[in-house]
Amino acid sequence: MAKLFRTFALVLAALFALSLIVGCGGGEEEEEAAADAAFSSATPASGGDLAANGSISVTFDNDPGDVTVSAGTVTPSGKTRTITGPFTPGALTLTISWTNGGGSHTLTYNVTAPDETAPTVTGGTVKDGDEDVDPEAINGDGKIEVTFSEDVSGNIALQTEGGDDVGWIGKVEGTTGTLELVKGKEIGNETTYVIKGKVSDAAGNETEVSVTFTTKGKE
Image 1 (cartoon, helix red, strand yellow):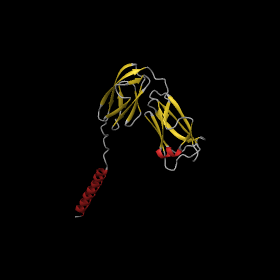
Image 2 (cartoon, helix red, strand yellow):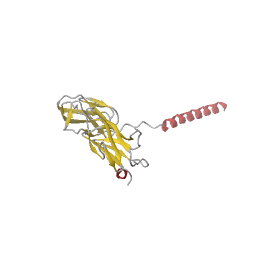
Image 3 (tube, one colour):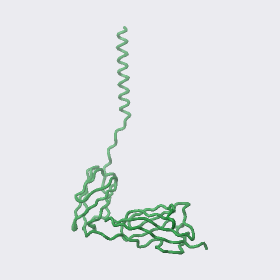
C-alpha cells in the first residue's frame, strides 16, 4: 500500500510540473512579424531633375526593413530613407527594393550637373532689418514664416537680440520655415528679435539664417 501511495505522489508531482511548464510557455507572446511596407512617395518626384550631388528622400507606409538601390547609398532607418549619390549625369533609372513585404519600385530622373548654389531666404512674414513690426498681428496669427529659394531641411529658432531663445516652436518643411507661437511666449513691443538657424538643400549646400526685426512701440 505504501508503495502505491509513493507511486501516486510521484505521478501527481510530475503532472504538476508539466502544468507549470505548459502554463509558462502559453503566457509568452510570440514576436509579431513586421508589417509589409509599400512605397508612398519620393522627393524629388520621379520624372524630374536631380543634381548629380543631390539626394532623394523616399517614404514608405511602414518600416521597409533592409532597403537596397541600384545606384547610390541608402540611410538611415524608419519609414523615410535618403538615397545619396553621386549620380552620373544623364538619364537615371533607379530601382528600390525592400525586405518587409518583398517590394520594389522604380524611379526615373534626368541627372543634371552638380548643384553648388546654396539656398537663399526669399521672403516671409518679416524681412531682415524690418522696423515697426506690429507684434499683435504676429501674435494673433500665431506664427512667423520664412520662405526659401528651394526645398530645404534644417532648423530655425526665434531669439532675442541677446541670443536667448524666445520659446517658439520651429520647423522647416519644403521651401518654408515656420515658427509657431507657444502660449505665454508672445512677442512684445519695442523689442528686437532675430530668426536664427541653418538650412541645407538636397545637395548639402548650407545657408546660415539670420533675419532681424524690431517691433513697434505701444500706441
